[in-house]
Image 1 (cartoon, rainbow, N blue to C red):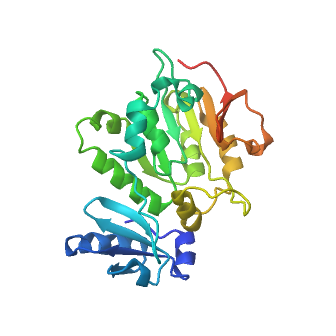
Image 2 (tube, rainbow, N blue to C red):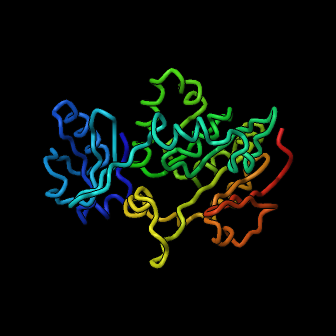
Length: 276
C-alpha cells in the first residue's frame, strides 16, 4: 500500500485533494485510492460545490486530476493513446527531434535512458517510441498513480504494446534511486540520465499549461534539482541530459558540454563518454 507523503498530509489540512467518482461502478476504485493516499472520498455531483481544490477522479477513461470550482479547465491524464502524444508519435519528426538528438539517438544507437523526473511520461514515451529502453522514476504518489494508469490503458492498444513494453516505472525519490544505481556495476546503469526538473514559479512569468499549475500546487517545485545533477553524473554511463526553460540558468551553474536550443526550452548535454 502506498503511504501518504508529507507534502500531501500538509496540504490535506487545506482541503486540497480528494478522490471522487460520478458513476457507482467506479466507487470502489475511488475508495481504494483514497485509502492509499489518505485523502477523503466523495461522490461527485457538481465540481463547483466540492470543498476541495482538486479531485482525483475515477471514471470510464481511467484516472484524471481535475480542478474543482466554477468553470474549471478539463481533466489532466497520462494519455499515450490520443491527443498531442499520439500526434507527436506519428508526426513529431522521429530521431530528428531535439530530445532524440540530445539523448544521442542515431542510426544504430538506442541508448538506455533513466528519466528520473518522469511526470506524465511524455518525454519517456517519445524515447521509447524511438526504440530506447526507458526507466521512469516518479517521487509523487499521486503522479505515479496517474502515470501507471496511463501505461496500463496504453498497453491495451496493439499498436502501442511494443512501446509500452520498453517503459518501466518505479515510485521512488530520484536521489534515492540514483543512489541505489551507484551501488550497481557500471554495466547495469543507464547510459543516459534525463532530467526535467520543475522550474521554480515566477509571479511575472507567462501562464504555464494547466497541468504545470496542478503539479506546482500538489507536488511543488524540484528543490533538489541541483543535487540531482551531481547524482546523475555519478551514475550515467555516457551522458546526462537536462531539459530547461531556454533562458534559465544551468543547474549548479555547471556549464554543459553543449546545448540544443528551441523556442521556449533547451537541452543541456553533459557528455561523459561516447555512446555505444
